[in-house]
Length: 232
Image 1 (cartoon, rainbow, N blue to C red):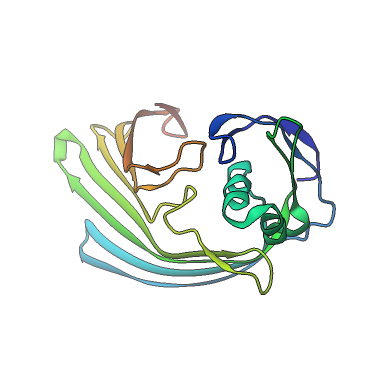
Image 2: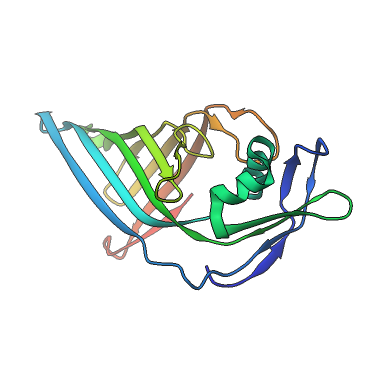
């Protein structure tokens, strides 16, 4: 957060119409303040049987002085829509927007404390277990997070930006894990994590489509299950 560095991130430059790596300087900010947050949550759990349970939890989180910084692509987009002066006004002393003698972007960026970030949503859970006697056991865990609000206000009195579904903040995510345990010492896990679509945060415009990731793992209990070896 305090160290300076220089990098060459990919930027889709609106002025040249060219996507390339442009020089960007990251400078320290010794005036950063610690983040603070307020969290409200509540939920219910329903257990129709001893082996099945459903849960729903509501959460409302407000973060003050969140430590953040714009990406170079954010600055280029803001420079395009607001002009250089407008982009610098939006981000205050966190950025400097320049161009070299060839007209290529030359940005300076530092971390800042955003005024306020608000997240609201629901968590859904499902747990189920099946005892198959001599064949072992089978269990399913499914967790879903659904956001219906994600806003960020950079400075007090500035515009409140809606980041829901954009800049890597998908509206929902789901993770389902199926575990088969033939014995108490051995288990096999298959996990599927599905992420909803969101706007890209990279040089190419457009949206990231919904995608899924599959993870496979095996766990073996050692020393009377006092230790576990997990391979995945």
